[in-house]
Image (cartoon, rainbow, N blue to C red):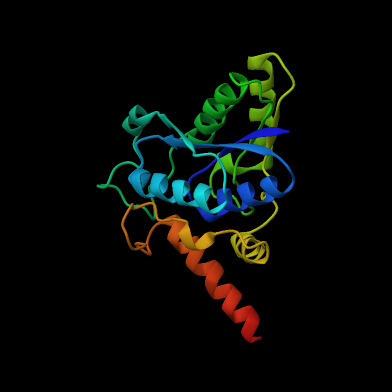
Length: 203
């Protein structure tokens, strides 16, 4: 079995690499450069992750022209807490990964979406629609996996630690700084999850 895994160097995609690798999948990690502020940090992280998991090196697509679409993910002059939506970003990821997979005769790809979606391209309905579109576009059976989509961030972190995924080498801040900014959606989500885990252990 082979699968392309959309990999940002964050805990979600890292957990998926760990899980699918243990299930016997031959994995092709794919990183998308869409002009995001955190691109360099993400790329460094996913390379570290693949080394730790003894997987083939990741491949990167340069789609940086997408940064022309206004979003705080790509524009440092916008607010990461309130202007992070980048229309069809996850659709762009899946289409690129679908093409990459199909060109190699692979009919499965995975994306690290989790529960409690903030944007419309993070839902189960979106995944099903994207899967159908890719299947139609390539003309062969095709599956889009979102194995974490029923788990919230706390559950993802707990599972990652349970299966010994290398979360210590991951990266998650949208600002692209060496130290997490604490303001972006990714940071807020991670901070809330960590706090919830501490409170749960203390109760």
